[in-house]
Length: 486
Image (cartoon, rainbow, N blue to C red; front, side):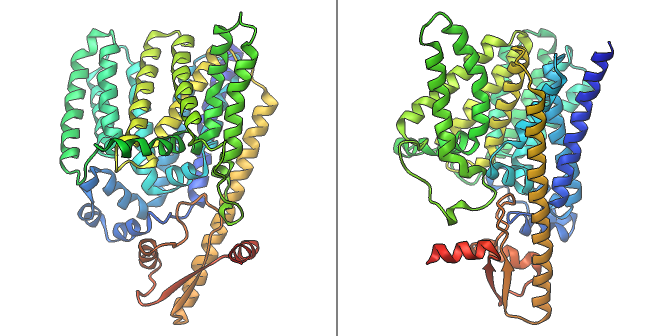
């Protein structure tokens, strides 16, 4: 009994720790380049946030929230930390009773192992987080509530409708995926008591989706087969290459599945080893997605046999997805949980296909797929009673904490010194403003690198329009840049 209480307490501590960690990271993070214009709008007041919503991409609510949260960043940091800790809590709650309490650290480690692109855009950028990460986590919260309550009360119904409205008005692709997912779950669900409530929720979602699509100012899907075929490498790059470490973790249930199915085969170990080696080769090729600095100043992307855009890698990842889905059905025993996970799996497939067919697809949507892999990998790890190496788990988490906190401490220092230096130049009536470049890529588009970003940058820092901007690297990064240009 005492051990059980300690395990439950540890789980709550992990949730609290996740909240505090992302709150600290948020406090150290400056606004990204995508948020500067939204900050200027939000500064003008609540009404202006509404007036300046661009709903031509189907984002009826997220446009307002981006404007509002960019100016009220402290509030954004709190809500984001709450949602991230909620996702970790959902993963741990779904795992239920475990033999080793340190397995509850796996979801937290998982969300910290995403690529630099995803961290900077989906975690640090207000725009990316509000439009994609917020609704993605709300989808998990929504289905968690469906799993949690045997019978939906009117209070729960209202809560689920609110979740639905928030999700359906954030990202058009997530909205369509979420609506289809609900249809699938309704078909899979054997709970007839809640059917009426499901239909009410679906009706609300369908009406909201129609409104969102109505305001869409571009075609939602391609009709050109050649264009779709050309998007296949982009799909592999977006879903797999960018987050290859998470994909490697997702291979754990596949390893166990292959071991189960091929246990009497002489070549069982060879097949599993070859399957894993392909992923490791992919990691060697795509390691720069995890680099906090721009390695393109030093190296260029190698286009060779290990490039994940090659046809044999495409076939490999199709096999990977199929085996991952099969392992879900093979290892998960709880029927209701399996229905939820199968619904999420199908949702991920639909979302991935949007990469192929939609000209307005944004990579930010991929966060839902990555979080789904983290959740499912954790569930199967618990189901299989995979041995938890406590010292290794603690070491990995400690290294990740040191890495992120030190990186964001440097980012905060660069941002403060840059801001002060810009103010000094403006006060001195300088017409060519030197801007210290942030070398760390954990903040999305933090350097004014193109015409549109420069325009927003000037508005944010109140730099006169007629002034010019010169972005300069300092220290070792200045030497690297000079060497590369030579």
